[in-house]
Length: 195
Ligand SMILES: O=C(CO)[C@@H](O)[C@H](O)[C@H](O)[C@H](O)COP(=O)(O)O
Ligand SMILES: [Zn+2]
Image (cartoon, rainbow, N blue to C red):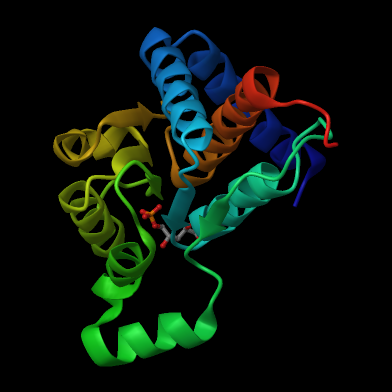
């Protein structure tokens, strides 16, 4: 691979990030997700997250920022990625189908007032849509993070962040940038140094 070709990946990323930075709808959604997360954490609720593939890694990354820390030393806040327990994932997939792997965990772990963040760049992953449905039925705040093809998720989501990336990888990059901004806001508002 030529260096020019590698540089082109960075240029594409730059263009996608520039589009995202000027996307008022995305910025408003990010603010709203931060506010909903702050409200839930203030009330002692938790944040659940799920995604497939790279978005599973993003779910884990975001959960780690919240329960560990982003930039500030402060109390731990409850956040769980539903992508990590291979025993639960394989049992649920084996017994109920892969479509239920997150929905079943939301059913077991989710409480009214918790936040569920479902990440799907296409907006079409059945296991994320099923989990959003269960989350809504159980009274969780439902958040979707998706790409340009995921607009129909809006029917299942209290807050929907649509990243204006032209392909999955760039949508993922925008999701992660938005998530870091959201974590930053949560820490600024709630973060006091740990005792
Ligand atoms: O990371 C990547 C591509 O960058 C892949 O692993 C990607 O996440 C997988 O193909 C996922 O299955 C895509 O699912 P989704 O984002 O459409 O819900
Ligand atoms: Zn990837």
